[in-house]
Length: 116
View 1 (cartoon, rainbow, N blue to C red):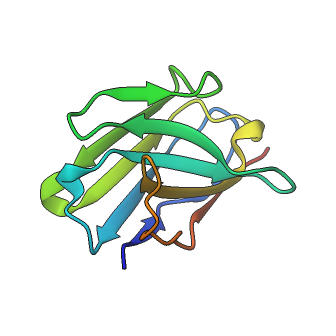
View 2: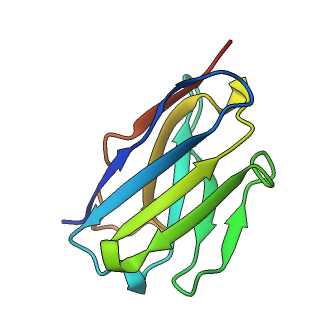
View 3: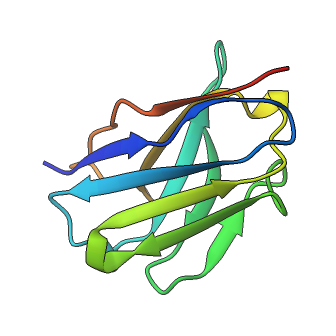
């Protein structure tokens, strides 16, 4: 089964930065598009950033210009650099394939809290 382990979250003040990491297991990462998702309390999980197997990136309007997704296929890892963080970025962040495959399982996610 494909699994993911997210890390790098934390508590920061508005305007701060964090870099999230995701390690993938049971998958040949270079073959798949990957994405970061987030879920805020009481909200549905939403797609934040995508990176295709060929490296093309796409962002939601809410994070465009502030977040950068990247991947290292050799390390089976995906990253999310988050700058200029806002309170509305507070959520649990997850990585997964894009599109999501039937064989993948959601990881525990990593909590990001932006607060003064």
